[in-house]
Amino acid sequence: MYTCLIVDDEELARELIETHLKQLDGFELVASCNSAIEASKILQQQSIDLLFLDIEMPVLNGTDFFKNLIIKPHVIFTTAYRDYALDGFELNAVDYLLKPITFSRFFMATEKFISLQNTRSIPTEVEKTTRKDDFIFIREDRKQVKVFYDDILYIESVKDYIKIHLSNKTRLIKYSLTAFEDRLDERFIRTHRSYIVNRDKITAYTKQDIEIDAIEIPIGENYKMNISDL
Image 1 (cartoon, rainbow, N blue to C red):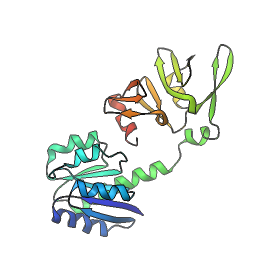
Image 2: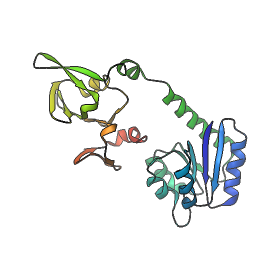
Image 3: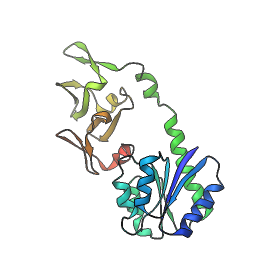
Image 4: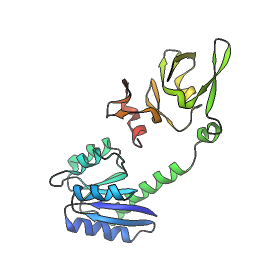
């Protein structure tokens, strides 16, 4: 059962989404709020899987509200204005629905959400093969050296080599970044064509970069979707 929260300052809009939800199996409406402030209180008390969020609202609009959430549920933006579509894309929204919302279009959006959930529930081949150990061996100076995943901060591509930045040192080996990515488990994410980071080590991030303490690592335009779960 997926928990849902509706946030919209228009009562009729909230009622329409609620009516659509009632026609679907597997979705539970936790609350229906008329402001972002009210929704914030709900989110502090209850885990939400899917947020139906209006954009144009008084006091605090939907995009600003969502940007400032520490724990972000999946979101489907609802609005009467096409101009906000880019904002929805940049925030990795599941979908962007224009009012008045028809049931067929609403159903399509929820199917996208379910598809995302199903994809994440299936372990990838990398997860299956690498989670059995918490380390890998790398070839360095004619030796096989053990490196623990938890010691890796980030990995950087340097021409035909990669630098593995550890908590206490850096190792340089001849390897392609893409090939090395296949040896890593799910805690590592590609943020740039030249960088892979350990999500457990991230201390802050923006749309442009990720921080690991004082280190700033760029986020490439083609890799922004990879940070949607942070």
